[in-house]
Amino acid sequence: MPGVGTRFSVTVWNGTPEQATATPIMAIVANLLGGLSVLAGGGVAVDDLSRAAAVTVHASTTLPSPVFAPVSGVRARLRGTPVPSAVSRAGGRGTVMRGIVWVKDGGAEYAEVNLSSELTAVGVAIGTDPVPYRLEYTLRTFPGYMTELLSVRAHGPGWQRALDLRRSAHGTWSCETKTDGHLEGPFPGGDMGVLNDALDCDLGFSPLTNTMPVLRHGLNACEGRMDFVMALVQVPHLHVIRHAQRYTHIAPNAVRFESEGFGADLTLDDDGIVVDYPGLAKLVGGPPPPS
Image (cartoon, rainbow, N blue to C red; front, top):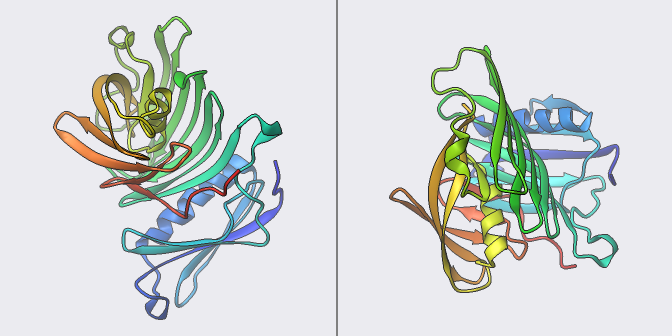
């Protein structure tokens, strides 16, 4: 992977640069990047600065070129020394490889995504609802963006959960689970028999899994409304339920999501990646460079 030994830092602050002060969101970013460095085999050093909190990561990874964007009242800046482009198209075959960061009201998520006729991704997220947790996942689809595997590990103080959720090429769902310690709520896994008409998994609180049905049916580009059954993985418990959802094209790169009385208008980029999910997450930075 390009960027071995790359050094980058992330500084997050509230308000204007002149009024910058360390904020609780810094702990979120530090924890998230700590999880990333574990995946990448790197290390993390956190500097306690008087005017802003900074995180420096040494990892075998890449980030987008330097960006500056407001995110839900918090400004975030990524700067590299140097950072290769996070998007490449391999051999002219239209493969897109991206490093993506979403900032959420109660956490953050980083994913390394490979998009072609299939989607593969590894990611790490942290959150606070209903309890503080850290989560790592691997996602892989068949051609046409139909789920093949979602492997998830979630843990917090005194507990761990693991789920390997699979869908066969014939449409049969299965799962393996592990649990350790006490976490109030349902156990990992669930009734796989109710999922056999589902094509997609949906990882709770993650904008990434919205991409699969949108790309498969071209809803980011073409008019239409589609109803789906999803294998929803509730986070952090990793309990799996059958979940009905509807996606409606409302404009180029804009889709309305509806489920059980909830609705949100999602903004996507040209790759079908969620840029803005009101009430859930915003992508840090701008769209990927053109191919």
